[in-house]
Length: 101
Image (tube, rainbow, N blue to C red; front, side):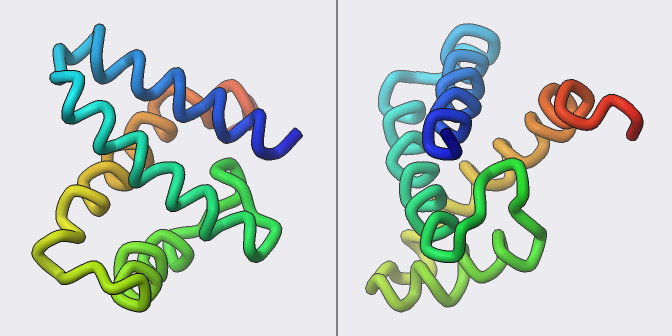
């Protein structure tokens, strides 16, 4: 269930980027790869995109990607993908999941 929920959020976000923001297929594919890495990272600790913390995102974009051999310069697209997903989720998803907030 968690994987399906995460995949649905990612799909919705990528559709928003491609159709709503006019991003290229290459950009969207790059974001997809980075966000799937994020989901893999989160699943190792039983987390999901709906339960991720700021600390988790920082660990992913820093230490985790470093341990995977990704150089700092090459981490910039991953950071952009995570940052934009986080902003999009704050504006579009959390109100649906946590309407009292």
